[in-house]
Picture (tube, one colour):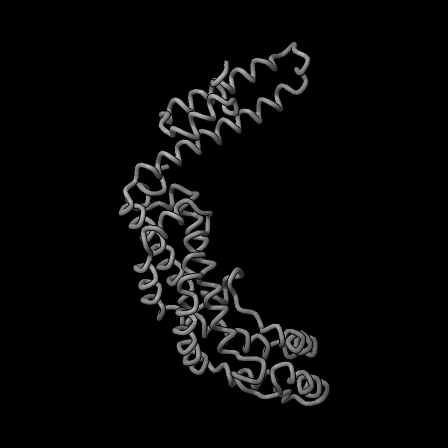
Length: 294
C-alpha cells in the first residue's frame, strides 16, 4: 500500500516534486484511503465504540480534501485577466451596494453595525445628560454625526472606482487565494489614506449642513443650568473645553471621517464574504467563473 495514501514517502514525493498528478486521481486516492481507514474500524473491532465518531471525522476530512482540490483546479484554470476582472467586479459590486445602503437617510443611524456613537471622550457626558433628563440633546447630536456620514458617502464612489482600477494582476491573485476579507483589506491598505484625505472635506461640509457644530454647542452648553449645566461645563474639557467641531483633542470632522470609512469597509467586507461563501450572491457570469458556479 506504499505510495497510496497521503503521508507515505512515495506519494508525498510525487506531489511535492512533479505536481503533475491529475486532480481526479488525487481525490480518488483520498477516497480510497478514507474507505480503508473506515474498514479498519468496522463494528466488532477493538475500536468499534468510537467507530461512528471517527467515521464522521474521516468524512469531514474527505470533504475538505475534495473542496481543496476543486478550489485549486478552479483557480489554476483561470487566465489572469479573468481573475483580475472578476475581483474588480466583486469590489465594484461590494462598493456599489455599500454606497447605496449607507448613502441615504438612516443608512448609518439605523444600522447597528455601523451607527456612529458619541466620541469616546463624550460618552460620560452623554450618559450624565441622559440621567438628568437631557437625552434629546444627546440624541440630536449623535444623529447629526450619522447624518453627516450619510451625506458624505454618495460622493466617494469615484474614489473607490479609481482604487479598483489600480489593482494589479499580482494583487488579484493574492486576493483570490486570501481570506474572506482579503479584497477589502487590500482596499483599506492601498486606498485608505487617499480616501481619508478626500472624504474629510466632504464630511466637513456635510457636518456644517446638518448642524453638527450647533448641536454640539447645545449638547455641551448646559443651557438648562443647575446640576446639568455644571456637570457638562466640567466635562466640556473632555472635548477641549470649546463648543466647536474641532476642539482641542476632539476633532469631530476627523472622527466622522474615520467612522464613515469604517462603515464603508464593514459593508464592503460583508458583501465580499457573501460573494465568496454564498453562490447566490454571484450574480454575474464573471463572478461565477472566478468564485465558482455553486
